[in-house]
Amino acid sequence: MGESKNLWGGRFKGEADSAFVEFNRSFGFDRRLFEADVRASLAHCEGLVGANVLTRAEGELIKNALQTIRKRAGTDTSYFDELPSEDVHSFIEARLVQLIGDVGRKLHTGRSRNDQVATAMRLWLRDSVDALKRDVRDTQEALLNLAEAHDRAVIPGYTHLQRAQPVLFAHWCLAYFEMLLRDYERLSEIRRRVNVMPLGSAALAGTAHKIDREAVARELEFESVSRNSLDAVSDRDFCVEFASSASLIMLHLSRLAEDIIIYATNEFAFLELSDAVATGSSLMPQKKNPDSMELVRGKAGRVFGHTLALLTTLKGLPLAYNKDMQEDKEAVFDTFDTTSAALKVTATVLRNTRLNKSRAMKAATGGHMNATELADYLVRKGVPFREAHDLVGHIVLRAIESGVELEGLALNELKQFSPLIEDDVYQSLSLEQTLATKAQTGGTSPERVAEALAEARARMSHE
Ligand code: ARG
Image (cartoon, rainbow, N blue to C red):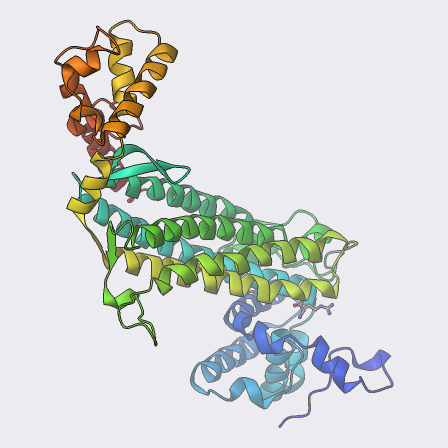
């Protein structure tokens, strides 16, 4: 166990209270920033050489030591636990000094943990945004595959969870595809604002050393450098944006989960989850529970919570850095872990879901869901829609009383309601017609849905 002296030494005479030391510590969770912090330190070291703060030889010594630390961390599992450090930044510096002595103490020239942590967070998040984009894509892919495998299948569409109008199952799949497409775009957009380098802002005022920030940014593949040092060290908007983008992803997954849970009940029985993604009951032998989807729905809450926690943490902070900001880490890390896992599980569920086509079709042809078609039929014969709506309402009532569907009523019966109704009405009431007429952009006609599917496929290869 190496003795860790804290980073502020000189000004302090007394020892810190041990409970406070524990409270103050973030190393338990911010070690996840290790790789990002090493990477930023390597670039900063190069910047110090360029500014003539370090000699080339000192720079090489520091960089080699950082590489050694990186390697040790990758192979030695107890490496992080040997040194009691406050956070990942002090840990790396302590290891550096341990390896190369006083030269290691020069690396912190011209930087503060304030710009350091902001830089590490942004590097970490940039990779995580990219990883999440891949997860979103995989889930979109699973939706498309499901849609393509059932390109003619029909399910009832609902409003108020009451049968409304039949839609293609693929149309339902593509609805969720659209939501995830917006999520994907949102991640691409926030990535731009994540990808700004705060390093060089130092504690809050900028650095007096002539570090070429642009060169450091290039080395770290940042798109730009921050323009205001006060803002740069205290800005966590990018964390909030990430959490809110993830919240929308979780919201979409949660709604999808809810649909799947309902459709997998015995009452609906449109979908069946395979054994791979369902669980049984310890008591009731007949049960097959959609735990996977319930957990996705349930975990949405914690991601929403992280978003609100971040907003609340930041709202009262005066410029510039405040220690409150250390609270960003767990919120952001857990947001990523939860959302990424939820996307992966959802994709797996979609790959392991079977549509009971005949059952869904039966449901889609029942319940007088073609009543709107009958109203539209009358409209085509010149009846104003409001009047047609009222007429059809009465016809539906008659059908319900007689225990039949609309097409089960004889022509003479229908004619009692309107003499305009002819024999061709039955064609209009057929499921094929019902679907085929929804042929404007965005509608559920087989033709439009086939186009939408092809378009969705093509979009998958876009950025
Ligand atoms: N662990 C700190 C954080 O996560 C690093 C920055 C500390 N800066 C300071 N001035 N105490 O925010």
